[in-house]
Length: 144
Image 1: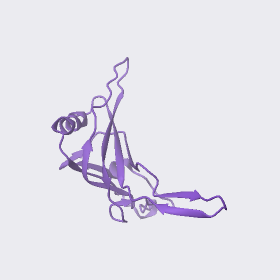
Image 2: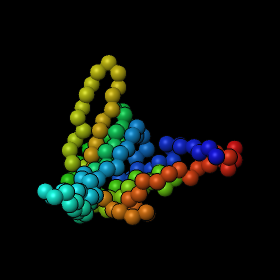
Image 3: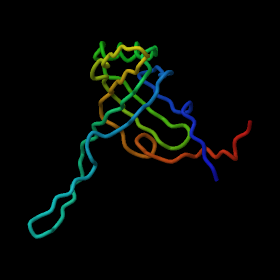
Image 4: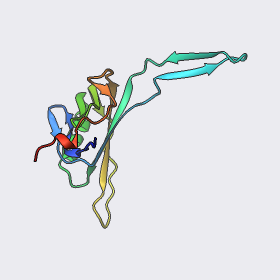
């Protein structure tokens, strides 16, 4: 069975606005979920990390109107929901309240570049809101 990934089926919602012109998005926890330590006699202790802070990094073209949306959220200083969904499959990342933490660096050159934005906050966990999954889009089942 062959599967298809279609980036147009990935959605990024910031507040109530769907970002429409982006190049890449990454959802990541800021720290590992588990840490390990060992004692002098070789015993190991596994510790669950309760920190759920994470970062959603959104890269957009220099010319994208999404830069205006992200700048506005940064300048407002307000918290906003941020949701990333891969509608090709089962991956999702949700922040009930995230903050755009700084203005993107600006570079200008011979060719148009990109702008990178970071939204930080507490990432949700669980299969519906914080899950790295596979792709359920079977090429053979598509109709054209």
